Length: 262
Image 1: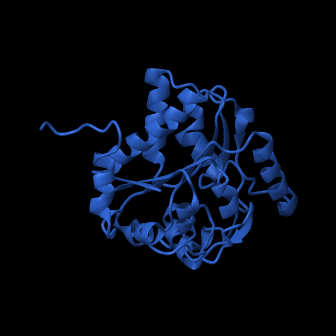
Image 2: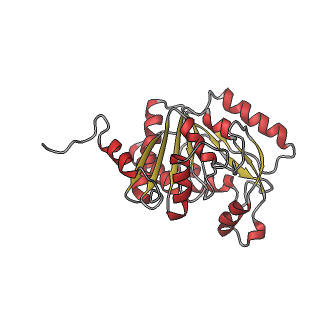
Image 3: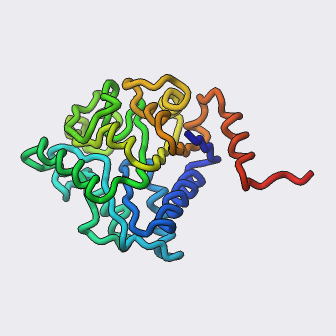
């Protein structure tokens, strides 16, 4: 697990976006796993800039989103279909048929979830999976207590998650209580994981995920088991890390990192 503490949200977003661009420049037909929420907005903005100003190409890219609310149609302003279209897909050259987002209106959730898993496999697996982290330490909608081997399925949202997401809806009662989500086991099969965290409200969850035990009560802690995971955060999100100085020392002394003059 590589921990990168950035000075502010903008720097975090740009650095993380450039990790995504490295993958696409190496493998133009890469499969990306995408996340929603306020944290990755800066990353998507930078990827759009790289596309428009530097020619970053998405024409061969395939994407799979982590999750979607059950009961919301694609056109609902708070659906993740709508979020991705407004903030990313309509600004780049990705073919619509290459975009996969869980259906919030499918009538057969079990069959859909099985199909979603098969489709990821058919596309060769996910090369890079983008993640956020909930204030209770969850990734995707894998709430505390989710199996670390879980697959794509319907999940009942925790009260804390509903409360956190209520700010996006007119009233708390409008927040769906179910979501279709990739499982922790599905996420861990991606070849590279990229988790973003911003703000003091995420500091405790970040510390537990990075420096605490691997536990289903903090599903983000499963990243400790992955051979190629990176966690980008701003200073506020890093404020409760006990080994922050060591993480910075590692960054300063990576092979190829600029060295001070003797």
